[in-house]
Image (tube, rainbow over the protein chains, first blue to last red):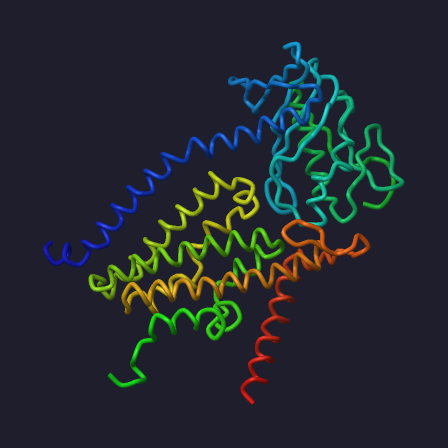
Length: 195
Length: 205
């Protein structure tokens, strides 16, 4: 017992004091860190619902959901957090729809670690703006040049997997919203062309 | 004590770390952040300073405790100290530089396994007093920042045509995508090490 203590007292004292220091630092910074995260989220919510000035999180929803209000204080849209696996890592999106849920208003990328210069181009406006104004009644489909679909999303060349991942996440999110989780439309283009 | 066994003085420690024993170009350690976060200057600087902070702090603690260290428990003490300071650096980045913290992602917590830090604890701080330990950390840390910056400079300039996010090359510059991707890191590192060796060889003649 004695020799055991004589050998390890330094490790024990060090673990105790460094642990305490870390706890104090974590305590004093955690509010600030959480604030950054919620600010990022609310900026994203307002960016996918044009005209929105204020958002409120619905606490009971299974998927993170936000109600968005305009300047007059009336409900002007809803936003959902959508998540899927991309080429590199998890992709998290914010998906905005109209208050009645019939039309997509916008999509923003919250988190992605795709290949720079290829998959990361899902963050570009040129790609994301394709989702605005689409109907939620029909699934979105990724198409290559020359292919057609009822609601086509142009693929980013060199980043088919990332393009499809985003489209799939949006389709899943809409299906969830409409309560049709069992029948998520595939993001694959239907008509012609090589696969 | 014979000259061969004499430990370097504080001043020698400081100078050695920057160029003669540069962690990146001469010792080739800490390669993970060198390859991973040098596609932009801003990321490289933040990573370099975070590593420098951890290096100085851990050298100070280890040097103060050096007389109490049990030989078979010393690695445990180093790891405990390093992990604590890395966590502090990580939390401060998340609280005060949230964008940078997102950009660097897992690479800040990974400073824990940067063998530069544990090797300095073992080679210097556990054997020498506070003065040499601090100047050793500053020298090696500066050498590491220099390594990160030189890779970041080449990769951001050629890969994005910018430095610190500010465009410096003309619009017509075709960004070399490969420089931003992992292969660009290996290519740049190889070329820079070759240059350092060539320069060293010429001086030696």
